[in-house]
Length: 514
Ligand SMILES: Cc1cc2nc3c(=O)[nH]c(=O)nc-3n(C[C@H](O)[C@H](O)[C@H](O)COP(=O)(O)OP(=O)(O)OC[C@H]3O[C@@H](n4cnc5c(N)ncnc54)[C@H](O)[C@@H]3O)c2cc1C
Ligand code: SF4
Image (cartoon, rainbow, N blue to C red; front, side, top):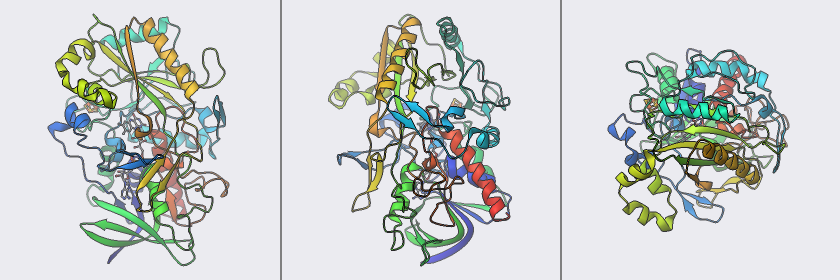
């Protein structure tokens, strides 16, 4: 087995690992970024709804089991930049209250070991790196902050009218914070209809590949990238207190790579799986798992997509994902607990309707030609996303089968709050004159906002990582991705992952005088 040695090895190049690699560029450390996938090619299929939604061209070709041993294909992507290549680039700061304990109808969302103030300077840096566009407007939930690096993306045509209608309903619509590169400028973002869930055909989405991995590895850099390099397991020394090597599969060979520091950034499910796979005599239940918490408290948002049709009012908008409503984020109209967030969503395409049909109706849905969906539905519809915070439960967890396959046991929490949020969406859309309102929920298969399987905290008995994401039980092991979240909040996770990665980078620089 060939051995190579580095100062820092980062495993995974998404929001966590990619951002960390960018922050370590130019330091004295020799850094290796390992990524199991390859670059997403720039090709016509990038913007082809059939390729993305029917052929699942870019989706990880992997199968996981649910808690009833039913096989499913997770909604995740293995590539340089990870899931950020496919994200909607809605880049929110968590609200100040998300860092404290919040009482929900279904239980308490626990406090974080750091406050909003600790993360605020890193949010600011992350917003600059990902070139976020926004404006706090009159969003009462916006935490204390300076101006956004760039002005918001203006609401186009019909969306502008809807926003005015929402205001007349007494709501407080605000611009969605978006990571788009030079929208409307030559060579920049074209504000197209295939953004969320698609890779950007003109490479103008702020993702971890474009904003971080590319710049980090460009030219004579101290950061090296290996693609198609799968980290199989981590090995410790005989005390179990130090990782000595990662065993990597690349080009059909097993290679053993050594380093001073190891950072696991494989995404919440795969990071937990890697730690569980790496158990040994000193760590019999999985690496750094003395607390028994590795893999537990898996969360995803309770999310429903809504398509709302107003026949007779043609949707002339190319990019409609520009508005958010946070009025129900901390409490409902008639209840004192949080309901969640509503945001406009990218356009629905006929193939998405066909694929979202329940299994028993799918042949029928597919037999109806796509032009009919356009004529009767998608030409007139606007799309929305309702998101409620998911709560951490020990029984919602990642485990490995005897053969090493991933099992994801998951039951959604906070259903009452989510239904109340959907009632608000319904009221809002009917108030805007929509006749047909179709909600779609994806359940366990929707792993897009996965988080919380390797939580951080002060107490080694109640968390796996310390507040700098270092494993309590291992001196040179960090987990820097969505895994560290003790709670999921109800806004999109990406910017918080990136901000904490920058915070960990500063910690590593100070700890190792880099
Ligand atoms: C369609 C879609 C839309 C989304 N929209 C938004 C949005 O608008 N805003 C937002 O904030 N978030 C959004 N998200 C979620 C966001 O993309 C994730 O929260 C974020 O990317 C998670 O970052 P991460 O570092 O935890 O993991 P990832 O970004 O998934 O990165 C993990 C990386 O590790 C690699 N990897 C895994 N296992 C191994 C291994 N064993 N060896 C080597 N490499 C490995 C993977 O290939 C991947 O590149 C969206 C996600 C999807 C799928
Ligand atoms: S052109 Fe703009 S809107 Fe279209 S995919 Fe790229 S970043 Fe998204």
